[in-house]
Length: 447
Image (cartoon, rainbow, N blue to C red; front, side, top):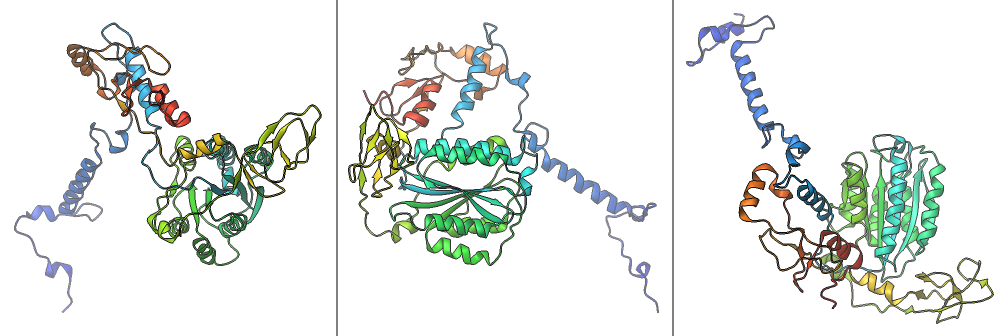
């Protein structure tokens, strides 16, 4: 006896007979109802808090946010929006043990994928511009550190600038590669091997780091890259990778193994602004993990020299660039002349720094506390900024705040005052950002 589907068709009690009818495509009416129910459930799950889709929640319509106040002015709400934008860039100030003397190699992907124009004007041009800005910020916040630059192009690694503490040399080297055309495939293994060779002879008291800007989704390596990863782990070289396209499994593994199991140092950019933020995060020295602290044995004394500045009527050659210059700095060890600081004496290999350089690197260990925003009130104890003496806006009564909240977004209401938790002085948002990003000392606490 031949079996068929009709012989074993069972009808559920809750299903009427006409529900099993089929349309022209052979789909039962019951199946169509179930599919419609699933689509409705999926659409509800995609809805956001504002009634639209969830990916639209972060966008605000400008005509809903910007509203006039009681006096018909837009100054109050615009000031609040600007202050909210400035405060967003304040970084984490949790104190950690960090290495203030750093040796870093910046690896830039210059393969053919960097000619893509998803970043304006293209990936390569934007990367070079951000790299130049990163070099200036790096030496501004880490004046006694060293940096080198390596380029990935045509399947090989090319040395752009040697490991040194002179930011001008690195900026000129980056500007010179703007004439190059991104070609070929990238090679992670060749780039890491060259970076490892540059960091091989750095002193033990210096941290070894590699910062890579990677735009491709593949790597063309001559050998086993896992052997190179083992060498990086053995020599305690920490790697941070910034991806420009999408997440790559081997990049995540490299960051995880070289950072004691922490893979958060591998990130993929969202847009041009996020690209700058990720590079800015690399300016701050990495925190030393507990595993690394266990491996460290005691403390290391660092020999450094504080040179004397001289001025000369007749120019003489410097020992670092062999150029005729007026004046310079005299090394206290070998009495040779160098033209700029900080640097390493080319004759006796003594680290030459100034006391100001040491103080600028010291703030990473004890960062300044974040200023707290003063709540909106009718009256305040301060009328001017303690630092720049800018006049603060007047307070708002409870009725004015309630009427304003009905028309504008409450998140953009601010008193424009930020209080130091130690000295309790009030500062404007511009002084708040300047104190934490540049000065690193509270003007009120230092009085």
